[in-house]
Image (cartoon, rainbow, N blue to C red; front, top):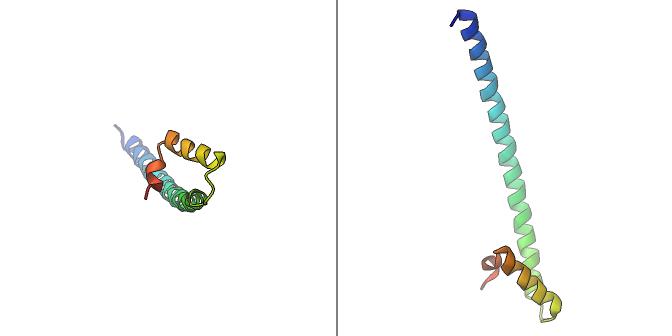
Length: 76
């Protein structure tokens, strides 16, 4: 491998590492944002579950939570 090829390879490697760092930072920010949104939505669902009514809408909500596999998040 010639010196110019090694230099070019080194430049490409540096560019790759910099880009991966940017992607990693963006993904971390996105995950943090999504985690915050999930917590807000979980609180909304908990509020819906503690309502006194035991109507069809609440039963459909409970069924949906069980089918999605997330009902464990709302058990007392």
